[in-house]
Length: 328
Ligand SMILES: C[S@@+](CC[C@H](N)C(=O)[O-])C[C@H]1O[C@@H](n2cnc3c(N)ncnc32)[C@H](O)[C@@H]1O
Picture 1 (tube, rainbow, N blue to C red):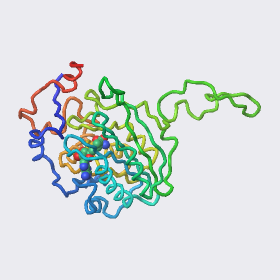
Picture 2: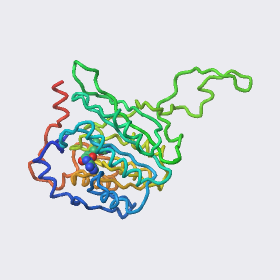
Picture 3: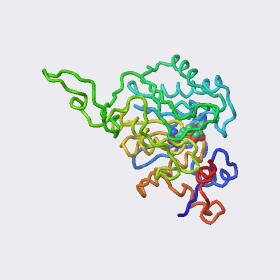
Picture 4: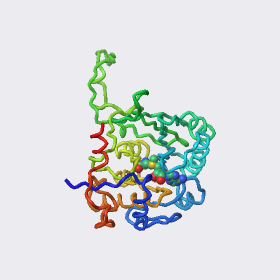
């Protein structure tokens, strides 16, 4: 099987140089989708003019943000600097949301380097007029870590609200069957157990999500070159629970364009931005690729294949992940 991945783009200056001429957005520019009204901007989440440009006086019902933290491309920041940076885009998010709206924030950590910003972020959020609603943990299949620490397998997702947005409880049933009996209760004089009383044969997601497959190179939705892609399934769950068809969803850290694609699939409109022209381009291409082929990503390929055809980058190579696995 031919396999043609891109390397991690934030850490590969050479490949970035090859891809940039193929990106349609320059910093400060916005692409508008004529079919569904989505927008993709190459913009800075902390800059008020950037946010005014992408929002253009519209207000969203849902924000889903997945900010980067101390990645290879970013200069290392202290927790205080990181949280001060977060404070800016949280503030812009509040003013971009409708009176009744929801905010979800993925809050990562780098336990190998002792970077754990969660408590500081939670405290900072108390200075903003959002109501705190839940603290979800998503479990990863494969973790990272050393032999001298607990392997890191969790991703934290914080849920906040502004006003009183709807929460669609039916949307967050999983496909995990109910198997445990119990919780006996007398109903109309007859003793019953939970499976008889329940509205569904499957369990609700709750705030620990163990049923979501982490994206890896063999999955159709994989976007090689992206180092922080979230699975479509978790973004889809958020969108269905906290918005309605036709609503506007915003994401200020687009990367592989997962929120845009999930919004398209659920008939929501999405405005999304990324400061990096390459990720803004990948976001647009992922939508176009889905519309043209029905595929959610580029398993065994990548978004710039046509542009780089015939170049050294297009040569068939062993996938990085295969090499890593064989070294384990
Ligand atoms: C963790 S990734 C988001 C992953 C995304 N949820 C997905 O599923 O693909 C963070 C992204 O934020 C972008 N970014 C970093 N600083 C930014 C800023 N100030 N404004 C907008 N985007 C930024 C990075 O280029 C990166 O693509």
